[in-house]
Image (cartoon, rainbow, N blue to C red):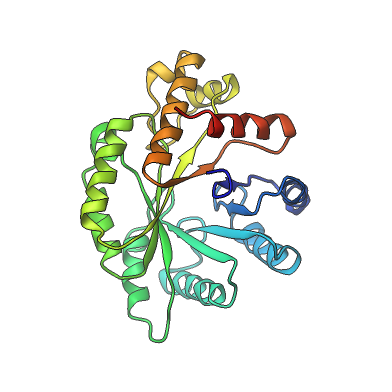
Length: 266
């Protein structure tokens, strides 16, 4: 599993990005994800793409493209910028795209709409990843995720599914079973993974993330969180889901902690 896992980089500027990329090189990490959130959007997001494309050819990069954070002026302009971004990915073999609507969906300009527009483009051969949140129906009373997935998948532009993080494996299993029934072809599956820590728990309790479910059991006992994480890693392995490490890993100690979970799954 270790050779396939992906690592999401978090940084505030190109200098921090450089440090993390060099840490990855030193530790033989090839598969990296660049999010599009927080400070990493607009100019910094675009500068990051140029910097990595020019200086770091050894990485297999998946860029998260947030339609919310990259929105510019109006829908037409925003779509054209995304289309240019997609076309640029066709010339770079180590460059893939995960399309996300963003934390606040733009009316009539989210991933469902944009994929429908993209399908109409002529001579455009591209495959994209899409996000899937298994926990919306049970924990947030949002019933549209399956319907949205089927609309996205029907475009024929999808080659990977990226599962949102959460701590209910039964719900995750139900959605994986559903997706495998709907999707007859082979798709790449990825799943978010956080390494438990007191700091992570404190931050989440202080400011919970929108539509991310973490159980009280995990939030109030680190040992329970550790047990769940071992179970989740095991589930990912059994279902051929590649983990995406979203916790900070940019020190030898933190990286060792990541690998210890991946090597000790039940």
